[in-house]
Image 1 (spheres, rainbow, N blue to C red):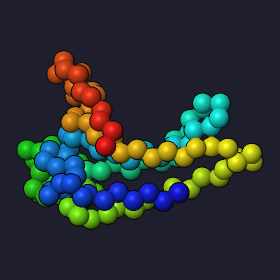
Image 2 (image 1 turned 120 degrees about the horizontal axis):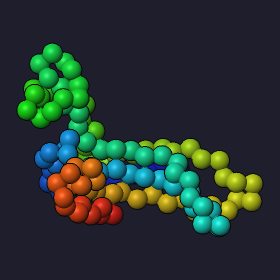
Image 3 (image 1 turned 135 degrees about the horizontal axis):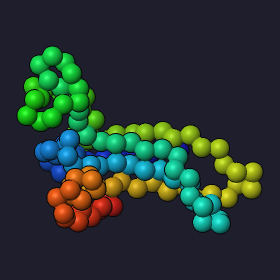
Image 4 (image 1 turned 90 degrees about the vertical axis):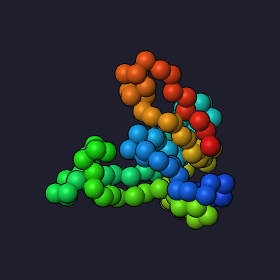
Length: 120
């Protein structure tokens, strides 16, 4: 299965700003007639920061550059391919969803706040 995500509505990279905190990911799964689900793959979007010695990942206050930048630029498309062997009876629905969260569940729990996951 091939998925393509195009950043058509934002004039900035997605996710934006504190990408070491914000989370955005694509999840592809198979749903079988009995309701069972199987995750086929996931693509996490964001950045990894590095310090002056090249160590990564590091905290924001120690960062001098990016180790990697896997965000979606404005008006550009990112394509992923996920392999899956259909069951012999050929019955499975393949679903893809792009999710966004302003911070990790662990960070929200530590701060004592709820953080919703938005399906984009």
